[in-house]
Length: 111
Image (cartoon, rainbow, N blue to C red):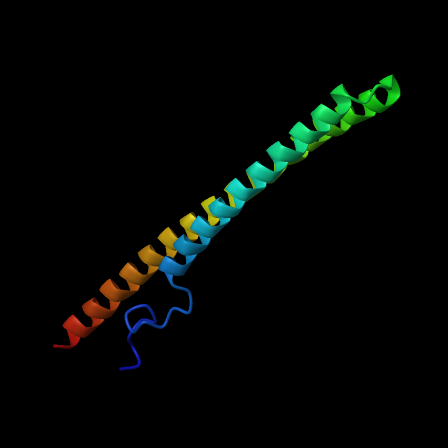
């Protein structure tokens, strides 16, 4: 019947499960980001400690601090993307439920 809602007939092109899986993948990537950023910051700090030249040590400390700020921003971005995917999954679920209920109401009124 042409009155059926897209969600009731499985017509949504996006599946909430795929969005949830994507959010999980983003969070996994965030963990890898944290591991790499921590390792790099640690190496730079070690280099600064053993530089033997004050100017070089100061530059390395500044680089380490800059890296820490970049890490914080990157971590927030990963989290924001994952949250957005989770939120979108919920919206698709609610829209599909509403479309299904609407289609059932229309079909019920025809009988």
